[in-house]
Length: 352
Ligand SMILES: Cc1cc2nc3c(=O)[nH]c(=O)nc-3n(C[C@H](O)[C@H](O)[C@H](O)COP(=O)(O)O)c2cc1C
Image (cartoon, rainbow, N blue to C red; front, side, top):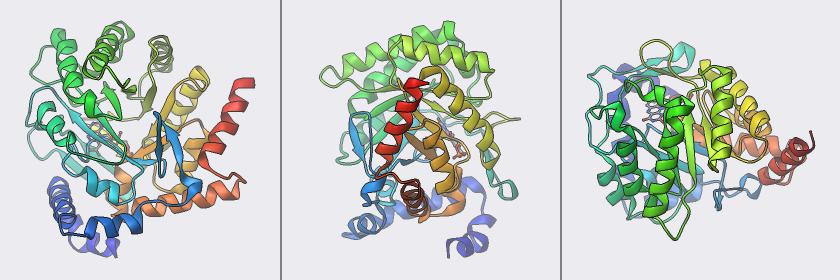
């Protein structure tokens, strides 16, 4: 059904317009009394085999929606009702900004991929914070980046502003230094620059949320050289970070997403796991299209997985399908739950 609608209508509209219209429709739909509850009852995973614990929380399933889809935290409740185990909003910047000129988002359907050079278009951290302050249930991560017009030398102060505004409402916070679309941002992945940035953001989170330690992650682009990935992994351990999101992007002008990233994202995940053991929560992202992909990442050391492109091509029932396929894989492997599979792999990782 979705494939037919996609072929008939959506694939003919520009990619960004399609996103805007379909997301607005979804948000409108869930304002109809009772609709959100019905969707949630139908789509949110209830199978105990899928339950997973991360960041001190219990999630109904390990598949989350990656950053970039709901940049301004406008549809969190609707997206959770589609069956995502968690939603990561953002990237948010301290100041509102329009992003790059259009067109800036492109489909590559034959490659099951997307290319974007959106440039962190968003309404700013303060607006998202006031929206997130009203949310009730579900797990929501918040991804922050640098405001484009701010000089690189002021990047730390800029990230700190966002962290202070958003940490109180974040179940986890992600420092995004992975995007190719903000000049200079990826230079922050160099350890000499990343260290003071992460120390400052950690302090900002603790100031803004003194009663609850907000888990802090860093999102890196695994087209980094292996030595740089190792250096960031070591830094994350040294600073007592909570996790790392490993994604691949940045091929040509803009970020590439989807199936072509699958192998490299998996390789980087394995590298991070080998380097950090079980001391970080690894969130795998990049090219996850089905339950097999999700299972492969979990067996490679991920606690959680995220996707964006798979959802675009798979449609609103896609999170449910992936979770169902994943549940079958967990059972077929003889585990009672994903937590149990993760614990078994962690035990092996500790002795090897
Ligand atoms: C249109 C689009 C916009 C994105 N915007 C962001 C963003 O604002 N912040 C971010 O951290 N990642 C962003 N991403 C990257 C995704 O979060 C994800 O890391 C990447 O798409 C790889 O996962 P996938 O292969 O499942 O799509 C964006 C991706 C796409 C396709």
